[in-house]
Amino acid sequence: MSKYITPKVDMTELLFVSEEVSDIKCGKCKKPMFYTIYYKDKDSVDFLVCKDCNIHMQRVLEEE
Image (tube, rainbow, N blue to C red; front, side, top):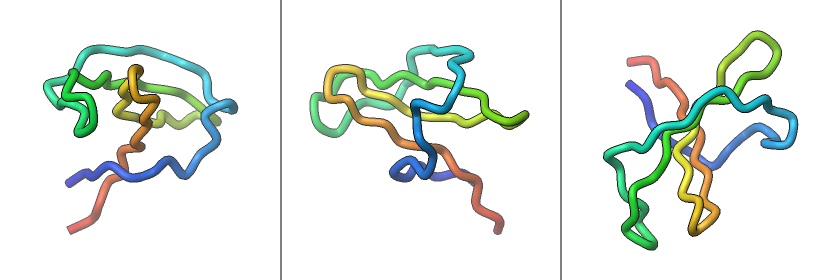
């Protein structure tokens, strides 16, 4: 299972890979958020991003 948290990584150190509109809406402006993927040190880092509000939420996996 995954959840979204305040980013634990520095966004400026990441290489942008792709972006697509998600079904999730921003809690602040109610516009659709973007699902973005970045890359660093052979690992991908996923985010939900609201470009209007400048909100970034990092996806982390939880073990059950």
